[in-house]
Every structure is written in C-alpha cells, then in structure tokens.
Image 1 (cartoon, rainbow, N blue to C red):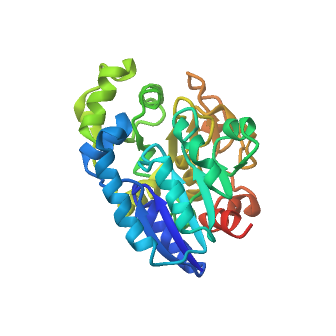
Image 2: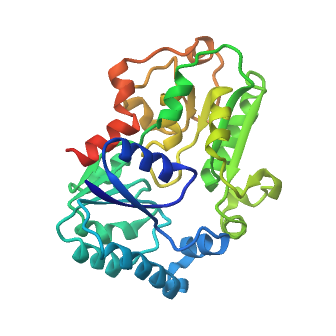
Length: 328
C-alpha cells in the first residue's frame, strides 16, 4: 500500500506518523503543506498566503512532478492553519490520483481556519478533533488526537521524584498565553518548580500577534521561543514533570494534542477546556478543570495519578488513530 502524506512540519510529528505508517506496512511519501519553514514564509501564510501565491504554486508543481509518476492507494492530508495549497491545487491532486482514497484530518477548528470547508468535497472521508465542528457538519467524523510511543514509554516509568511540578509546551496563542500565565502564578505555592515553553513559529508572527492581541501587549520578548523543542527534549521534560498544563485555543472545543499526550505519559493534567469532563478518560484524581481559580482542597491536589482502564488508554494511541482513519 502506497500513501501520500501531506501535513505541516510541526515539532517531530511527520517523522513519528511516517514511522508508525511504515510499521503498519505502508510505503510513505511525505511532503510539507507549505513551501518553506522559514520564519517569513510561515508568517506570510498565516497572515495572507496570497502574497506568496507564485512561490506556493512553484512548490506545488514540484510536488506534482513526483506525484504524477506514482499511483497512491491513499492520499492523507493532516491540515492545520499552515495549509498553503489553494482549492484548485487540491482539485488537481484529486484528478491526478483519482483512484486513491482521499482522507482529511482537521486538527484546527473551522472557526479558526474556515478555508478548510472549501476543500472537504475533494475527500472521501473527513475527520475532525473538534466536537462542535462535527455537530455542525454531518459530513465530519469525530476523532480526538493521539499520543505516540514516546509518551507511552514515559507512562511506563512511574516516579515520585520530579524535576518539575508541571510543564507547559505549546504555541503561544493569545488566550492560551493569558491562562497559562495566570495558572502559573496561582500554582506557585503548591507547584513552585515550573517549566514553561511558549512557542511562536516566527518572530514576525510574534510581533503581529503582539500588536493585534491585547493579551500579548505586555508580554516580554524573552518569554518566547522561536524554535520547537526536539523529540528528546520533549521526552526529558515530560519524563521529569508531575503534571501537564493545558489551555484551549480560542475558537475551538477540541482537546489539544498536549492533553492526549498527557494521557499517554500518564501525567496529571490541568486544563481550561470544559469539554474534558465528557471524555471517557476523565477522572477528578487525574484531571483538574481550571475555571479561573485553584482549589487546593480538590481531590486532584491530594491524590496520586490514578491508572485508567487499559482499553480506554489504548484508544488514544497513534496506532489506533491511524487504524481508525485508514482501515475503517
């Protein structure tokens, strides 16, 4: 089985997904969904990709030179806000690989990335991590995100001795930045050892967001990082953390991948996402729903991690995620 994977080069997810697909027996060709990961290109795509349309078109044509020489069984697009290809490009890809099964997975909400709705018609199956999008669109299939084997291995090593009381690693969306900062301050008395890594895809995006979003107006430049953490660095941080902090991005109800990775690593979780209580893995000993204040008398702060049912745990693995999408 030959599979064409198109997705953003975000952290090490393309490599992790490609490795899992190969273990499942697929021959995989991977292409980034944008022509470059340079700061300027990433920023321009998020602000207005039409500015560099010709550059995107040239990159897409290079992809098509290779794609036309092959016959794929599956074309798998994992789409976020970084997707640079136009509707006509997706249509051309569909025409070229007319016998392939086209599958779309949306890991950003349609409110934050409405363009995605215009290309859904080219796909045989469309999945989303966001329940609200699924409820509003009967053609979407609900499927939460996943954890990789790296987090599963972290979960196998239970410890009571941690370097960090909690960690946060994620993109510094304005609302997310605001809540993580607030949680950090309120948790200092009980969780003083904190690791926070606010990521921006480029300095240009940081400046743009700082000007446009009031939550970032007083933010200091040295609070942010412009290079994603590598896999080993992420592994070390999660391995040495008691708890994971999460804040939902504005405009979405879907659980972030950090939530699911906390499940995989068997870490306690503090999140602002109200929908977390409706998931099968939820239990108050492991998950604290943050509503603006911290209640230190809550069972979450007075108990150790509680093991969840094995079947529920395995349901969120990358292997199971891919099987649902590709073997359904």
